[in-house]
Length: 173
Image 1 (spheres, rainbow, N blue to C red):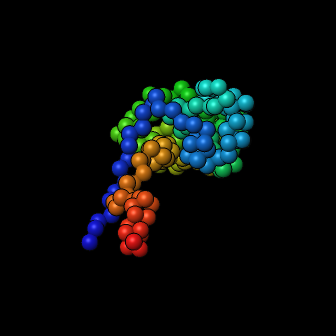
Image 2 (tube, one colour):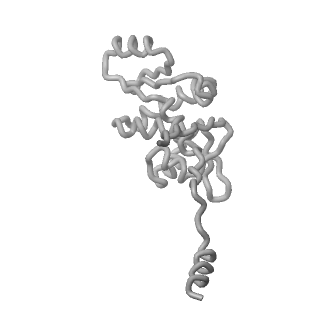
Image 3 (spheres, rainbow, N blue to C red):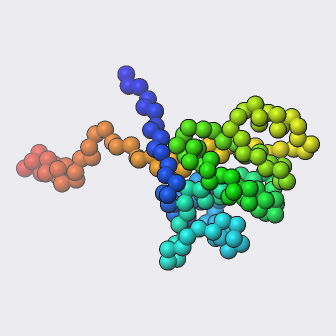
């Protein structure tokens, strides 16, 4: 009887880069959406020739933008959230990337909070005058590390077609 192995989560480096297709997969958006956000200066990645290259912080920002768009936030409100994130997320991102802290984004479109403490999150939600949306930044980081998990190696080596042909000839011959 074999035990199911737990998937190993690889740490994500803040300097690691991601292609547009990887970012689209992580954030669950289209490549065209990424292109449009770049054109609108929502999130501007580096350009290597015709390719867009994203850093971990930019991928997380895009994931959060996509999540807020799915929840009905306007781009104007998202820009407020992004301004806050770009000022606050950099220092906290290292902790989240290393796996030493959970981080949650709470917003109503006007007020924005980045919190680690669950009690403070509950207090913010209790004191809110209008609906607040909660997005787990840590979950967005896990999507990054899930993308970097190396594929499982097969237990049995693949048989070569040449070996099969040789053994078939030996049986026939």
